[in-house]
Length: 461
Image (cartoon, rainbow, N blue to C red; front, top):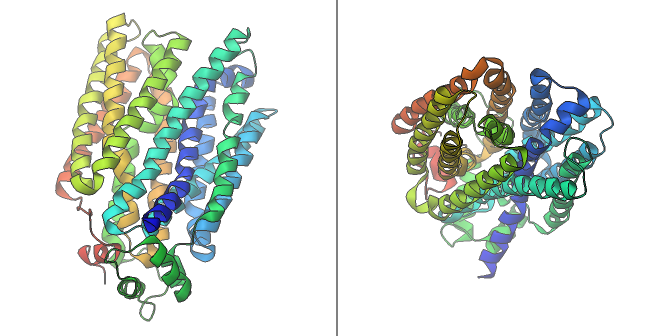
């Protein structure tokens, strides 16, 4: 019982990087109008403002695999906590557009780093039978962070409205960004009690430390020595070095799987919809306060269905969750596209409810499928010796696509006339049809398989 407690606590603390990732992703949606007015932004420049954080995530996802391998997962997570803290306070006290972009970029680097290191760390400390649920705690925290951001934005907007200040006229938007500093500080100090990854320790020839930590965290077989031999065999340092080429034929299959799932994740439109949720609801005729409340509903739905997926991912399997999620994507995005095609810019109350219902189903499908699976799947399919680099590739691909899709969503949705939203949602729906085919034909099932055996399943010697 004590072993399970240490494992659970360590996974939850590491996954706090995901909570800050979720909060950072969604918080800007509540400040859109204030930022546009204060910095005199058009659709393109506001799209770049959103993308500034995403560009940071791309840089973070590229650069954090090396320090993660060199200094360890735990120390690297501490760095991400500092970046989150600096970004939160800097964004809140930004004195012009350029300073705001810089601090959002710094936060993005933290997000990119966390998406590489947090799932890797949790996968490496978890026995196979619990790995799916424990890595999925990261996704739970991401969506909890998104809900907290939407809820925090809504509460701050109401408080300042009661004081006679709107979001646009006052400093409410600064508080929306600044409150992130509190969980960032908590994340930093809680990490000190976490153990190092035993697999990282073995890779660094710190065998006794790894053995001691494995005995505390638990193993797949209950036999620490057997687990140690499996890890050492997987690393196989006599035939492979930690500096061996990553982009080579033997890793082709996991590389293509990681790139594919990350690309499809963003071609669903998930980040664009989260960033612009209040704006989308305003397109359907909702007022500012109502649009923010509907965003809270979206965040709550995300949380509930992530919890459902987390509860069954190690029983139901990764592939089945992706199948259910893909079908939900296609239906919900198709309905949203049809509603925007029919109503354009003249939504009736019923039309607005149809879009709200479609986006609730969309978020449920994402939370139950792609959202729950992506970071678990990528953290599983690479061998120990290149896992950090594989996670970095998946994270880079995810954030590169997030930047591209989010940057282009506003110009398409608002710049192509009344059919712009219809075009955007139709493209997302079409991409999800392709994802469904990919899941059916190419995605392997990894549930319950020890990390060291997955590489054999993928034909990696």
